[in-house]
Image (cartoon, rainbow, N blue to C red; front, side):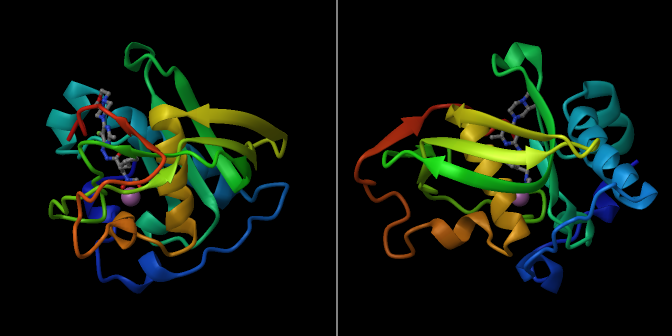
Length: 188
Ligand code: NB4
Ligand code: NI
């Protein structure tokens, strides 16, 4: 299982790399990596596992964060988060997006960043995405709210982009035009 010691931190060059597309059928290695990423996110929302393995909670994690520059990430929102979304995204793409932006009013954090970086992270409010699952079957979905924000945070990791790259350096909480605030505890 993935532990915090396996997660690389700010300054590690892999976090700034452009990750490579994955070939299908998946190698045993890539299948295990995909399952391990989803397992981490699920474990990180389970109090016993958090306690036992000192895990930082997350709703998503991307392969570069365990030092594998491949275009794979996992997202997990359990049923009581009202989102009920659990997925592995391989070779993900944003097909289209709203003009309207959105941001988490609590800001964002990252398992690869061991310090709070305050500020609004403007992202697209709604995205239509496509990706492949571990069976190599392509799927397409429309996301909004926190799942849309999380998908974009993870996709950024595959392109070597960190959440704080989007924060206005002069005024981190500057008003963002045509944007909606998503009020959710950052949950960290
Ligand atoms: C990715 C998120 C940062 C902003 C918003 C949130 C948490 C992360 C980073 C968008 C994506 C990880 C991956 C949370 C969290 C709310 C839901 C359900 C019950 C606890 C869980 C806590 F943990 N971010 N952490 N950061 N990233 N919400 N929640 N809660 O997930 O670095 O690249 O269990
Ligand atoms: Ni992150």
